[in-house]
Length: 255
Length: 271
Image 1 (cartoon, rainbow over the protein chains, first blue to last red):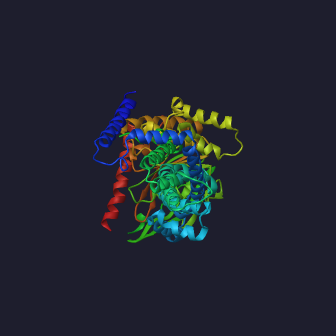
Image 2: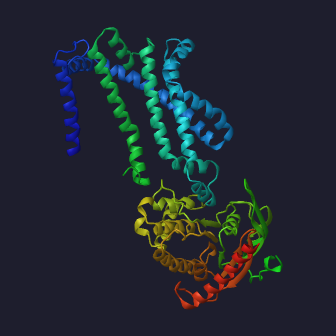
């Protein structure tokens, strides 16, 4: 209860400062609309379904891209951890690709796939795979070897060893890797949506883009708030349960 | 060097032989050269016997245990369990390490059940029952749902013991399992392990550098010397059980072995 109150006071104060700044008249309302104007835009955009529709379009792309990215990155990461050759080759490639900001994939995706859903998906997948691979490899190679030895004496070999020992033992690294992959996927998608105008679906990035085109600052800020909110909620739904489980089992997370 | 370092011919243990180590040699090649971990080591253990391997660090006792477990392969020689050559780890020979090596992603019961899930022919309810039975044996039945990090060091080793006992192996291999525990916890565990051994009659090979511990637990104490790792001498311990680690008779045996141990380190220093 006390925590909720502190959170509320913090954000109320932030909004109040914003209101005061907007009301001071130092900046034009075109550049800094008051919070009420942003709230009005959001309310109308929610009522006419614009926000909901764009959110659905964006989330669908994100989920598909993320699932594909993890589906490729996780097994490749495990392979990397088990095999020096894979680490030297695919691993080096993944590390290199990770240094490439995912926006840089947009021109290539546009030329290859045109202004299509395929281009969107491609950018998200490329943004996700590398970081998931690297985190998985790191996780699997940081497992104390004693776990594998103990498991071996009890007759755990092959697939059983991978699914019942290596994967759960690297869970702390996996979750942070998946989380990082999620963040990368989200960033890639927003970049793609802002740059790629396509007709098959109007996502949140497009709303943001047209906010700029129309010089509608209330729309720009409003959609940014929606994006932040979705990121927070996704984190809570997708990763918090895992993190809670880990903190309880491993006894981590308390200082 | 002379005859003192020649491999000691051990007396043939009365049958049945559970475990036979035959002329095992193992070398490790490192950057700094070749380490002669084991040199022509032979040893026999009878069914139900409690054998302790003692020696200074580097005498190859842990390597020998690894080879018996099937985790490491000898360069020469072989190890037979019930007359069959050991080629890899097997459910009949479970290992307890110096670290508990419990899995942090499972709770206590889940850890004890890990090996049981790999034991064929058990229904889920039988597994659970058996796991609970062995948790009771080590006195931790009320901690079945606890997380590993919530246990003390001694409790963790008890869980590791229950985990090793649960699949009903014929042999327990223990690699300094109590070395990292405090003295009070350790003494408690000496009582427990003797009691459990007498109740289950497992064949136990126990590695330690603590002479008193070896005398307290073993039917036989086998002294090893380092570089190259060899068996030096063996001491049958005929004291009545349960033995008290602080007993005077036990101390007499321990000091005899400690003297012999000092000699092995001494002859090495002269070289």
